Image (cartoon, rainbow, N blue to C red; front, side):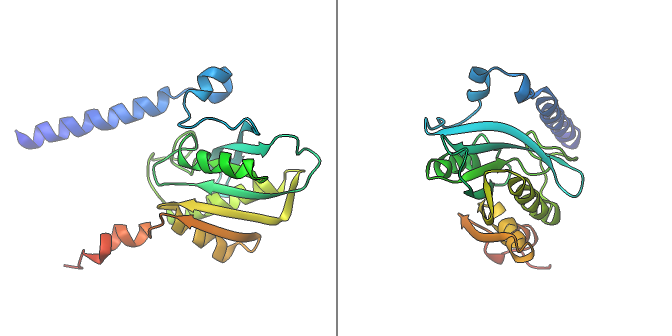
Length: 202
C-alpha cells in the first residue's frame, strides 16, 4: 500500500510540474507590468532589458534577456553571458547579476539554460554537462552578432552549479576572454560522488 501511495504522490508531483511548465506564459504576450512581476529584483533605471531567443548547436531554442546600459547605442561594449544556479531562471540570480553588470557598462545576456525555464529541451529540469556547456557558447554566438558588442571582449559568469559549465566552455571556446564563477561547485562530481566525495563505489 505504501508503494502505491508513493507512486501516486510522485505521479501528481510530476503532472503538476508538467502542467506548470505548459501553463507558463509567453513573455512576448505579456504587458510590461505583468512581465516585471516575474523578476525577483528591480530593473535599474540606467539599464534596458529586452527578451531574446537564440539557438544552440543541438537545435534547442534558448530564452534570454539582453541587458544594455542606456544611451550606449554607438559604443562597442564589452559583453558577458550569465547563467545559473542550477534550476534557476533568468528572472532570478543571473538576471540580477546582468542588471548590475549592465549598470557598469557591459552588454549582458542572462539566459535560461537548456531544459530550464522558458528555454526548450526535453525532459525538463535536468542538467547535461555537454549541452549546458554549449549553451554558454551559443550565448557567446548571440553576443558576437550584436552590432554594439566588441567581439574581442566577451566573458562569461557561471553561478553555483553552472560555474563548472562556465569553466568547461572557457576551456574549449577561445572567443571567451574572461570567466568568473560565484558559489561554484562541480555538479558532475557531486552527482557521481556526493558532497565532499562521501559516496563510495560500494
